[in-house]
Amino acid sequence: MNTNLTQEQIDKYQRDGCIVFEEFLTEDEVEEMLKAVSESVEQMGKQKVAGDGNAEMVEEDSYYDSVFLQRLNLWKINDTIKKYFLSPELGEMLCKLEGIDGIRVWHDQTLQKPPWANPTAWHLDNPYWSFHSKNALSIWIALDDATLENGCLHYLPGSHKIARYDNVDIGENISDLFKHYPEFRSIEPVVAKMKAGMAGVHNGLSAHGAGPNMTPYPRRAMTCAYMPIGSRFNGQKNILSDEQVAKLKVGDVLDDEQQNPLVWSAK
Image (cartoon, rainbow, N blue to C red; front, side, top):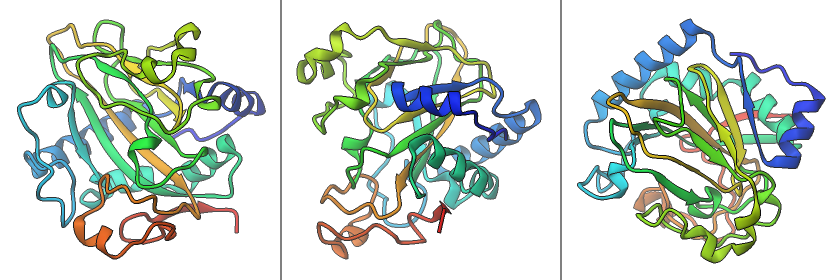
């Protein structure tokens, strides 16, 4: 895993809210992660979130579930996934990109567009989550070549600087987000085509989406979202269990090591 950074890359990320790294995983690392992801998906069945307390979150026959196969918190059940996404070296790299002093895992997830899958509507990530932060971010690792034909990501550079916490569901109208943010309509998108092993990083308020998979082959990716240390509960459940939410009140710091382990801190 190549976590080296240049100042030019840091400046680009902070300007655009998104960046693609061409040589992030080696071929062997891609194969290792693919194996770990496949084992975890098989183990979870139709359960969407690994771990206790989320039995209600299962795959259904809906438009959303035809956008991608989604399984979350694989780090809790697979040591290989945990090794990558809880890596202090990766944590330090991500903190340098955001200019922050430390981060915790929010959740990982595999996002796999099966053959002929629906497009992913334009959306923001952080407004879905149980905390609000202008410095949350996600890494998105291509495990297959991500192309225009099979549904690669598209980013709207600079959108993170003007986004609020208004958001939309990932539904059939892929442009719904622009009803909340008409100012996004004039932004030229970055088309994030990636070879397997490349990675994109984007801010939690960066607008992004993906096209449909117009091929008979899957487009597999593994991602992880991170929150800055000191982030506070905003009252939204998101992936938290009912039991976890019952123990929280708005404003509480999210620092449960079993749910949101510390990845890296400068202190």
